[in-house]
Length: 194
Image (cartoon, one colour):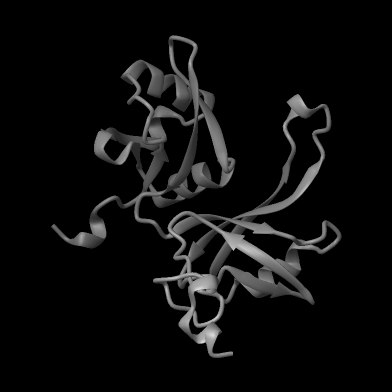
């Protein structure tokens, strides 16, 4: 089998490492809650070692549409009343939910597109908010961007003249001084010689 066809049009619903794998009934209830129509889906299978559920869509368009409608995290409800937070990504790993911290709310999304488009194709934006439980469901200053990565995004970027911090699943932490992935800034051998 061609490696490129594995997980094609497949969405990964990631559970935490300490969570139990859901039943078919619980998964299908989750699909209904997300409005994933049966005629858009081809298969569903669990990967307990990876703590995730794979959902194969009939077309790339259906999978992308489902992913773009997904928030950064969603609540998965078990039949016994327990709930856990899950995240979404393409199973092939090219789609990421990128979070940007430290950008003033007045800066428009088009400014982010001009910077992030160097690293892949930007699909959609979310301005994250504090939860309703706080009594203040206002913006929290974090931007969420669904995008297809073509190359690694550094941990810090400049948008206009603002330095922002970047985070996404699978991101490689690197030293800010020499960019090596095997240590952090305080342990950098080049820093001691500066």
